Image (cartoon, rainbow, N blue to C red):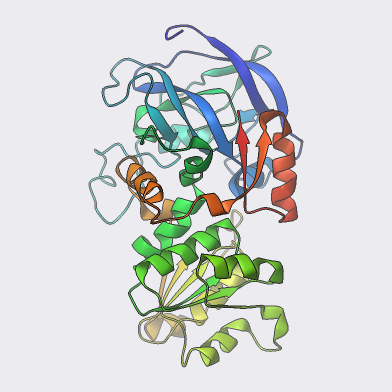
Amino acid sequence: MASQVIKCKAAVAWEARKPLSIEEIEVAPPKAHEVRIKTIATAVCHTDAYTLSGADPEGSFPVILGHEGAGIVESVGEGVTKLKAGDTVIPLYTPQCGECKFCLNPKTNLCQKVRVTQGKGFTPDGTSRFTCKGKTILHYTGTSTFSEYTVVADISVAKIDPLAPLDKVCLLGCGISTGYGAAVNTAKVEPGSTCAVFGLGGVGLAVIMGCKVAGATRIIGVDINKDKFTKAKEFGASECTNPQDFSKPIQEVLVEMTDGGVDCSFECTGNLKVMRAALEACHKGWGVSVVVGVAASGEEVATRPFQLVTGRTWKGTAFGGWKSVERVPKLVSEYMSKKIKIDEFVTHNLPFDQINEAFELTHAGKNIQTVVKL
């Protein structure tokens, strides 16, 4: 099948704000420096729901969504040397070419090699490998894991331990890696730190896990949904607080609770007001606040400049700062050795034909992570 078109099932988003449709599609063979992957498991992320809502400025339709997947290499295109058929892999929405100035700089993981074509929904040569009912179907974030087979650039693939359970490690394709890395890479949480995590969904729980691994001694979870507090404490939060329980702004509450503010704070909601609160909850002189959540296109964040003049640092993170091709396999190894959690994030497992139910669970806030098995 390596040089042939494969017919398979995929969940196609024909247009915004409409449920996905399970269709038979055609997946063309991989071209030069591309890999065709049989998807075994994929999760549904808030970013998928964001694009499907029509709010994503780069969202184009029809498209095959999905970017938290894992599978087996079915075939490789010309020039692919580091991967072969049968390899166990995780597709990556953040590639690592190893050659661009971003990859060569240790300060960032934002490889730009295929950024332009990826943002337009194409493979690196500016075309698509997907067709359905005679129509071209676009790729999504260079991964498109809501398909039984997908084609990705070879620089967007992490080869992992073949013994890893793919219905678990697929989650390292986005949320867990992002939150965990925000703590250990971006904020560089130090032993003995006091941290605050705003938003206790899957990414926020991964931040808590990262803070705990890094040696933080006090981790405060912040959320308006008290139902999330028990799980946050299981992941390592020492206490949790609800902003709605106070008449004053939550940043003032946290400053009082912590004798001047936290060492590190993390915003995991994408809400502009929460971003400001997270920064202003930081300690004068050394506090670091990391924006993890993604706000809607065109929105602007605000604070008083004096907050920064007096020594607070405002940072952002993408995919947790991990250089993806080399570090995701190591994250899989950390999971296999029980250094980091993954199983505890999975609250629901669904068959592929119920993928729309996974979106409903996400919108209702009734899950942490839902894994779909293909």
